[in-house]
Length: 494
Ligand code: ADP
Image (cartoon, rainbow, N blue to C red; front, side):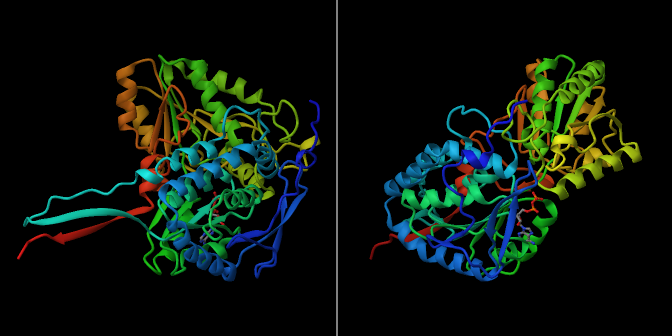
């Protein structure tokens, strides 16, 4: 494996770790600063400022102040600002990809079209001038009754470190499109690309304060969700944090949408194209973001007639994945985000082994040697897992896949649905009727048949059960940030 230039060398400008409030960079904050680390090397990446309650308060005020100017633009002008914003992000594709690889350790990929955030932004921009109300027949008559879709006001978007710019785009852009202004609070672990995103918004013509980016820790998150100036909260993160968010939001009865964790099942029937099923599931559960994604299928549920063949191929595929630093050539899996995450994942694996949750087929250890300084976990697969065991029920947030057997369709569904979560699901079969039947009965917000649903911008994304509520993407994702006002006009004459 040849070493590529380090990510730092590839960047033309030094990324800023300052907050973005009211269109200004804010360096000195009440919560101080932290060192952001490079997960590939464990080395220092940048010093980033953190928002405390005081900066959160200023950011919310800035957002409130900016709303009049934002709504003062015509819908066509607002559409064009968002389109310009998308174009600027697209133009910075290389810089943003490098930043992402630096902060998250995700292997740098060759460009294949516009990235997901850009696609979301262009899609949402198209809605700005199409958000219509309706006329309502009312009784008694001689009245005109109509609805006007109105923005909430100020939206708080709390994003996790793994979501990066995509998560911010899925929340902040539809909120802006609906006429709100926004405070984005990214998780403090990876903030550089988010701060750059905010700068591009400003350069595109967003009024200063319409989009504030205030990285911070839990205290900043709480200050935001309890703030009386916040009118709607969109949160992505873990279930325990979501409960804190709901408790905080109860202070002012602020409405919340939640996008939480998952333990999605990939169901492989005996008539499936096994190669596709294995490649897709392994590629997602182990290789994508080193398994650190809420929607990834971390349970592979295979029919017993093909189980052994599936298991063999999964182990082959998992053990041949190339793990390494984000900028090294040929790397397919990068590190996990922190030392603590690494220890947590290894701890979960060791506990599963000692409990006998299943047979450890490959992986399970931290990588040493050349990679000892980074946070690397071997792609890990457990076979013959009992769905009731912790390894099959807990969201590990790392490259760990559980293989589970089923007999018939009913059992496949009962295993897949026997989970506290319900974010995604995959079905691999050549039987069209079965594909639709299973898709219909899966308790999940989105289902992919014979392929992963690539979260297209035009489709709604979200969960059921403890994976959350509310939708991002599609028209549903815009409507989350609007509420209809009803106007009744008495038309009766003298
Ligand atoms: P994950 O489990 O994916 O790492 P978390 O649920 O810990 O994500 O965090 C998601 C987001 O919620 C982050 O921006 C984090 O800073 C924020 N957060 C953490 N604790 C709280 C809290 N008590 N109130 C509000 N936000 C919080």
